[in-house]
Image (cartoon, rainbow, N blue to C red; front, side, top):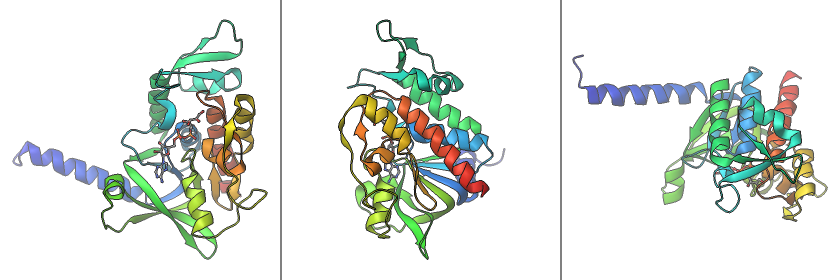
Length: 262
Ligand code: 48F
């Protein structure tokens, strides 16, 4: 090796990352946010042969999974979503006096969801913030992205773009992408008011069901999953129970796959 090993390493990283980014500038599906619902969606989409990438603002994908309930790093999942946990090889223990509900280690869950999505073929771009949508002639065409440190430091640096046939808002409680679409593109979304209805207070059973029900196409080519969907349609919050998130991720993948087939 004539070149210094330091340069071999640097050059390999720059080339390999650049290739990965170039390969993912045109996608079937762009997912914003790397929370639990998004990771499940990414895996199901990738397994169906869909070209999908996730753009996550933070250094570590996983969203609200890591911290469990109030930093006690355990979460709860109910029977209806156990087959998704099993698919990702996430271990769980049924609660002795609450049949149908299981506890599991939130760090194991976050790690397994990320691993499962990546190994199925989804690409994750971490430390990348989505700051806008590409909106042409009334249609959602993709995302406007920039490095999170650029966003955080308020640096005056122009972004790059990613083109996609479908966009999934998996940004959690704030529904950042749908908010951008309603505020800046001034579109009416698929809710009774045509606007984001806003998340309601805690009601576990209702929130768990509505998270899945509210996982819909909000505008042609623009879907929401997880807490973003609940915020859009005015569902209740549910705290550290995650079955609804997992089922929402699977549902949004099914909806997008059906749409892409049309
Ligand atoms: O909120 P989050 O974990 O998404 P989720 O799949 O799951 C919600 C649960 O974690 C929990 C809950 C369950 O009972 O209520 O809160 O709905 O993760 C959302 C991710 O999106 C990222 C953010 O950093 C987080 O990791 N995110 C948000 N806005 C952007 C973004 C953006 N503009 N660009 C990139 N990533």
